[in-house]
Structure formats: C-alpha cells, structure tokens
Image 1 (cartoon, rainbow, N blue to C red):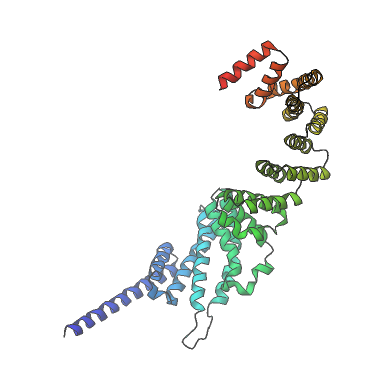
Image 2 (cartoon, rainbow, N blue to C red):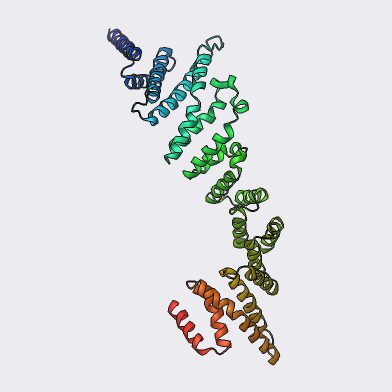
Length: 400
C-alpha cells in the first residue's frame, strides 16, 4: 500500500514538473514572439537545458535560439538607426548564438535508435550563423582596441574554431576563408597580451602564414618560449627570425644576448659576420663584433674595429669603452709576463693609450663606476697620477 502511494506521489511530482516546464517554455515562446523580455526568455531556457534530462528537447533549443536571434536583430536595428545601444552587447549576443547552435548541432547529429543520423536543422542554422560570423572577427578587433584581450581572444577563437565544427563543414572555412591567417594573428596577439603561452601556441602555426604579421608572430613566439623557459624553442625561433629579418631590431640583439649569457663567442661572432654580410654599414654590428673579440681576448682586432667606429661616430659610449678596454687589457696581459724595462715601457704606453677612451666613456656614463672604475684606478696608479688616483680611490671605497 505504501509503495503504491509513493508511486502515485512520484507520478504527481513528474506530471507537475512537466506541466511547469511546459508552461515555462510557452511563456518564453510568447515573449519571443512579442519581442519582449528576450533576456529573461534566454535565461529561462538556459536554466532548463542545465538539466541533462532536457538536453534533447528541441523545443527548448528553438526558443533559446530565437530569443538570441531577436536580441541580435533588435540591437542591430538600433545601431543602424543610430540609436543608443551597447555595441559590446551585440558582439556578445552573436558569440552566444554560436555557442548555443554548436551545442544544438551536436544534439541534432545524434543517431536515432536505428543508428541513423537525420540532420534537421544544420543547413538553416549554419546559413544564418555564416552571415553573422564576420561579427566574431569584428568583435574581436573591437575588444582589442578596448584592451579587453580576454574577450577579444574568446571571439576570435570562436571565429577560428568554426572551421573545426561539423555545423559548418559545408563552408570549408579552412580552405576558402582567406582571412583565417590574419584572424589567427590577432588571436595570437590577444593571447600574448594575456601572457597565456598555451593560447599563443594554439594558433601560432596558422598566424605564421599571415605574411603581413609574420615577423611579429615570431617575436611573440620568442617571448612566449622565453617566459616558459623553453630554451631550445626560444633559440630556434630567434634563429628563424634572424634568417628572415636579419636587420630587425629584435632577433639579432636577442641572439647576441643569448650567446653572451652562454659565453658562446664563436657562435656570436659567426652571427655577427652574417649580419655584416647583409649590411656592412650598420655600426651596431661592428660595435658588437668589437665586444665579441674583446671577450675572445683578440684585443688588437677589437681595438681596430672600435677605432673605425669612432672615426664615423665618436659619441658612441660603448665604442670608447671597447677601445679603452682593448688597450688596457693588452697592458694587463703583458704585466703578467716576466718584467723587463722595455716591457714596462710598453705596458705604460698601452695604459696611456687606453686612458682618453676610458675617461671619455666615464663622462658619457658617469653612473657606470662598476665598468670604468677598476681600469682607471689601475691606470692612474701605474702612471703615478696622484690627484686622479686619490679621487677614484675614494669613489671606489665609498661604493664598497
């Protein structure tokens, strides 16, 4: 008896729930027809679909999509008539339309009991969304201008993802849509601004086919790999970037910095020679070569290059530094050998030759005591320049 009463009770609950659901769908459909309370109709249908038991109810999906479509049409009309309307809302509604219809399409594509798939809605739904698809790109660019990169990436990701969605198979976006590489670039750009390496890498291969932004994509990849501590990929991409853009202000300097940190002077010199082969007029390449030779202990060659740079532009601090250190280091190296009167004279001669370059560098970079301090200290000491020695001795002691 109790079981029977419980069964009757459960039946009443189910019937009551079904009636309530039917009433809710009917009320939402009426609002959609009238074009009122469309946001409430959308929320109501989304709430019903959150129950897995309702996922295959096509009536709910139809009302939900119509509520979105009418919201979009109303917003678009207001913008057309130049009435006050939030452009962001229009882009977000379009985004939700794609999300809803892609989910609905997966329901539509489910096989029946006999394993047959009968697509009832795909053709019409995809045709409508295809006309709205450019708004995902436009919305993404709009959000980029507003520096809302999370929203920008979301819309651009949707645009690109349509190429993988069964709903849009007939449109063959990956083949026919020539804008895909450029959209991928802006998606990579947004992801880079978010410092989200995974999202950067997702569309980087496609973005690299955008010839207009190819160089920038390589730069974003380099910085992403560096943040992720992926040294091998970072180095490989820098090399690729330099191969395509040897005169870029990004790839060569970063590669030189990479080799310098690793003390790979042979590789750094080879790279610089390649750069000079492309443009021998670039003083930066010559100056870098003088620094590399300095680190290799090839002081005479380093000085010759530094001196030639200074003859073209004597206001470059680093050229004065390299020239001074090249002479100074030669003196230091000779000072370590067996001392003779002749040898001593040559050491002092090298110190005197180094002096004007290092003093000029000091004037240009007074804050770099750590760079010019010790060489000038040594030179003043050896040349018996008491006043100058006392002054720099005091500076270095105060620093310590």
